[in-house]
Length: 539
Figure (cartoon, rainbow, N blue to C red):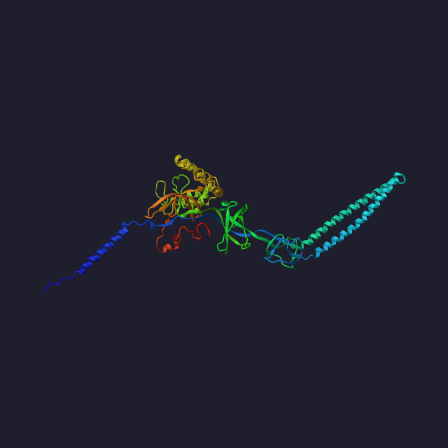
């Protein structure tokens, strides 16, 4: 009886399954313990691009006509007729309103009648003067022939002087009555109210038939405004007013203007502020043409003052920049103040702002945690103490922060070696001294005037050193020193050290999962502000 052989396929299938399981396990172990994760999957990577950037001071304001006149009444009476309404266009000299002239006309008639009476009396006085002069001359001739007495001559002389005095008094009365007549005629003319300037009637506060009493208060009937040029009255906070300077460019948008910009130049900043709920605001004024009459009185304007701007320049997100400190490293302090480029404009940063940033721990995006001078990590008590110092510096006034910065700078210079305390280049030392000696507004103005110049001339003005992390196609990360310029707290201008198209690290990627949904908007685009405003300001 032949032997029955077993089929080979069960053994082949088992061996195949075992080999597949072994390969899967090996691949899982390699992925888990041996494979190095690609750095490009760990970071938010942004390309260096060219674009426009603006460092803006934002505020709200209202529109008012540059030239306007509140037209009032100079005489009392009933408002008989109003010939215009709101929106009427008038030319200078057009009739606007009329007041009942009955009483005023009666005063004019009375003055004229009194004047005629005085003029008739003047004729009588002149005739009496002629008679008195003749009598005096007759007595004088008789006295020469010794045909009269001295008493008669003196009487004739007194009569002559009296007639002359009465004539002079009569002429004065006539002049007084003429003056009263002119005033009565002027009041009669004031009953007809004319346009003092050409423009539009923007408001009418009086009503036809209303009785006006100028003895109590000067009544305002209407307002005529020239809408060809509008003034933007902007309220700027005391924290930003130091950045303003006369002549700086500004623009604004209005509700419903669909993003249309209206440009002008700052005319002046009023020195007296308005205080509302302990908030100090200063009025900044600039004018804009209104040729198509699209701007109306009392419109709300969102105003942007351009402190600095650049076009066609290299831009990186502010989160990718770590600003280098201005002086030597303070013992026990951080090696830098990462993110400072996003909190203050590089071209106009003040010394107090640098002092405040110098007191913050170095916790840059993706960077090492704050640590002590010997490299050991901070304890919880040290971290809390540092946070308290940061809060105290932030609560200080501008002058106190500047004084604190100067004190810390002197302490560093006294404790550090001369080689470490000296800047690398003489022009950098001059720039730092100039920045420390100015207020924030003066420093910003100096940058725009070209006072902060580097070795290459005005193109380097306001430049500061910073560090960015550059990643190549193979995932190699390199820390690179760059020079930055203007910052709008969202993007930073790069003056040197980077090329267009290079990729920089803007932060760590958020972990996938439900927790990342609340911050997904930040992971999508580190170069965009959370409020939706495009880089470089509104468009």
